[in-house]
Length: 222
Ligand SMILES: NC(=O)c1ccc[n+]([C@@H]2O[C@H](COP(=O)([O-])OP(=O)(O)OC[C@H]3O[C@@H](n4cnc5c(N)ncnc54)[C@H](OP(=O)(O)O)[C@@H]3O)[C@@H](O)[C@H]2O)c1
View 1 (tube, rainbow, N blue to C red):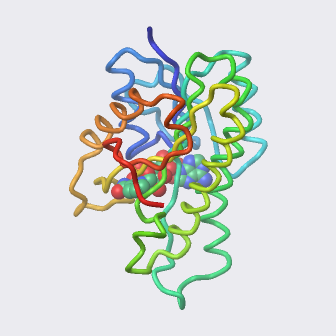
View 2 (view 1 turned 45 degrees about the horizontal axis):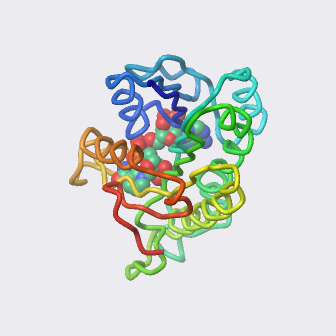
């Protein structure tokens, strides 16, 4: 039975590849983009979304118009220009928190009615291994790390609150992937990473809710 997925930040990188592979296997990917970006291959529908703009999020929810949504993948994200304490500014922290932590929650909140009308009730927040406090031995990327750590905490909050309704909410590290963000030295192509991510998503059950997982489904340390 084909499922409807909404993927944020689908203009390029991991988001575009998620849409391509979902379409190739017969699912129904809805791709959100910042206009005037061209739609990625495979999208059954593209919807405009600037994730930091509440009116844009509200318009996205209205555009779904009562249609059921099976899976939300909060993929849109940014890395930071805050490699050291000296380079970390309040503005850069606020920018990363707005896009990487606040927006996924606001999008999930707005799309809850659509998710409740769907069959899977699954929210996937794309996190990063750099969010792990346990694994942080190198410092760097202050704003990126901290904003994604906040996303992990918010993932657990949503998982706990929505568990009685049968929701599954997880945070997933997508791997180090050759994209504009991951750079050319990354070991995984978007195709390889997304194949693993979709296999992991397919195996998720409500018992996994609140977990932080690697792209291959193994647990990540908090
Ligand atoms: N690549 C890696 O190695 C890696 C590793 C760990 C985690 N991740 C995570 O994986 C996700 C995807 O990363 P990627 O490598 O595919 O990055 P990417 O190639 O830089 O693509 C980022 C995507 O997010 C969208 N986006 C950024 N800010 C947005 C905003 N304010 N509103 C709407 N869309 C916005 C971009 O849209 P525009 O094209 O309009 O800018 C683009 O579609 C991110 O959450 C990232 O943190 C990536």
